[in-house]
Amino acid sequence: MNAALRNHTNFIKIRHTANAKERLEEAHKVMGIANQLSEQLDGIFNQWAKVRITDKEVRRLIQMAMVPNKEVLQNIENGELDELSTCFKNMCDAVCEYNFTSLTQQTAATKGTVFGAYNAVTGYFQNVRNYKDDEAKMKSLLYGGTAQLRTQKAFQLCESFAKNEIAGMGIYN
Image (cartoon, rainbow, N blue to C red; front, side, top):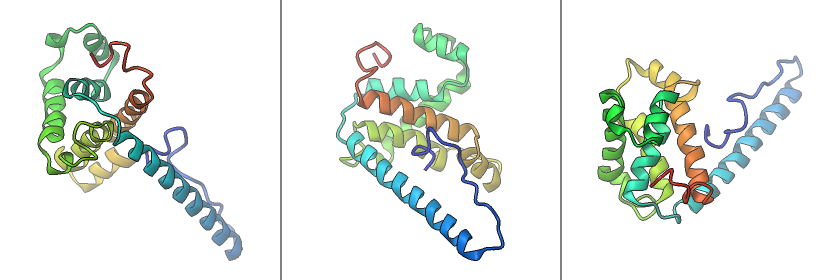
C-alpha cells in the first residue's frame, strides 16, 4: 500500500459527523480508493516480474535503496565501496542474501526480476530485520520509519529501472 501511495499521504481523513449515512459513504469512498490503488499496484508488479535484472544490478539497486545519507550515496556513486561502514555493508549483504536464498525469491516472478529486487528489500524489513518489539516494527514499516522510507526508495528505483530511465546511465553498472 505504501508503494502505491508514493505520491500521496499515508492516511485519509474521514470527518466524524453525527450522520451515519455520510460516514458510511466516506468509508465506501476510502475503500474504493484502496481497491483502485491495489489494482494499479498489481499491474505494476506484474510488469516488473517480466523485467530482467542481473545479480550485479540487484546488488546496486539494494545499495541505492538502503542509503541512509548523502555521504554514503556519494561513496556508492564514486565507487568508493571501501569507505562504506561495516553496518551499511552488513545490512546490504543481508538484503542480498535474502534475495538470493529465500524460497520466495526463487519463483519465476521474483528470481532475476525487478519485482524480485523490490521484494528483497520489503522482505528484508518484514522477515529478516530484528526490531525491539512489534510496535517498533509497525512504526518502521507503516508510519514513516526506516523500513517505509527504504522500501519507498526501492519502489522508485525499480519503477525507474523498469522504465529504462536509469538502466543505461551507469547507476546499476
